[in-house]
Amino acid sequence: MIKKIILSVVVLGISAGLVNGGVYRTIARTETEDKANQTERNLSISQGKSEEGNQGQGKNRTSSSDGQQGGKNGSESDHIASEEESKDMVSFTGTVTQVNEDLLVILSEKGNEVVIENRAWWFATDAGFSAGIGDSIALNGFYEDVDKFEVSYIENLTKGVEVQIREGSERPFWAGNGRGA
Image (cartoon, rainbow, N blue to C red; front, side):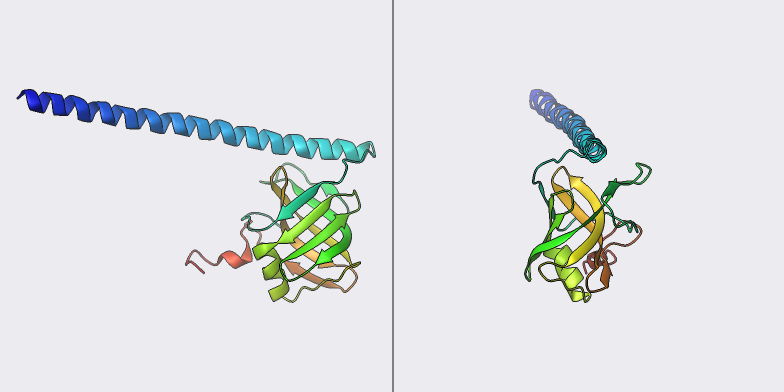
């Protein structure tokens, strides 16, 4: 009988510890996501202010790779779209400074370096997109993190080639239909 009581107390203690740990982790993750979202908003606001005041931000390098959200925005100038969308859409025009089979580097008119690489770049090239050094490029997408730009649409203004990389539901076209494609 004593063994059963001791075993019950031990199982109850372990269960309580697991529940407490789960609650703590959920709270910590929520706080981390809130801080990340606030940082992203602050970045968007600071970019908007620097555009208004014609102040450069130096040479920032942002990367686009395997994100899962986005949408098409037809504007070709650098700006930040309304916050009514799930992510703040950003459009860039710039010039290709580096291109190879794994990445495309674009220097925007504001002086930021935008890198499109990995699956996003491979999907674009498989869809027939091409670019050369010096080509004028228009693209749009959103910032997944402070320094990670996810491209949704890219157009080579020099060659007249364009590719939609993400569908309207903000899902990348290479992601398949949930069947592991």
